[in-house]
Length: 376
Image (cartoon, rainbow, N blue to C red):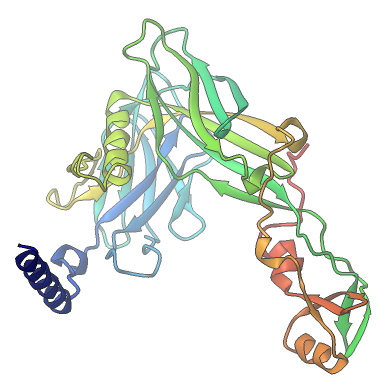
């Protein structure tokens, strides 16, 4: 009985090995067939500057950024009313002047490419976003939870969307007091910055709706959670939250896009669905166009989180874990060899010269030493 079982197992193992040896990489046609569909990214700002980015679809296997669409003519059009030109700068980005649109009117985006193709979004109502009531944060077991509170007393918003921009202060762990110049190790003449700042923009699609509630109120909606060891919390952290009012159709578009891009990978996740925006090609109705153009204003609110207000036992990463401790070079001749190779002298110890890399001592390689104007 055991011999038969062993033979069966052995046969299965050999079969699996043979199959593994016959597997060739598979590239579906959808990946290799070239496409050149227009992608429209942005929205019509009802109370400010509208910024629209135009690009083209490209193969998923490509290693280059998506091609930008330049030299297009782009307008914001009011239904039965005037139109407002958007000017290109930089390449592929089209920006309007500051506009204050009529909330009683509907608006759309109109595009004519350099090749003569015409595109237009559907006319949509101008929605004015209610103010953000507050952005709160709380230190929890899982980290720092950042939440948003908002409401619309008129009850006409109901569909909300947010994005945010994070900024945080950081510092290198290695601070040189020496430099290598003209073949000599001398006291450093211009010190490296002691503090720098970095930025990151949100990439997740974050929405909420109040259609099932008795009031149009968003209460303690969780935007993101920063883990207790997050590098961003080591000194001081700031988040600028932007809020947008949406139509039901725009909410549904982004909700489907979220499901198609974020909730895929397990047996129980929803299958990808056909994503249809509100932009059409007028000169070729059969041509797909990607994007959804809404018309709404933007509300912003910023908060700061200081390390001193967080639990003392939390130990945040520095981002420079691979840089510390720095190397020590003992033999004088070896010191000059490594400095000629591009390493940085830090200081002289009893064990020899301590050296490091530019990436480890100059925080400008990872951010900027210019203090943000809003920094507190």
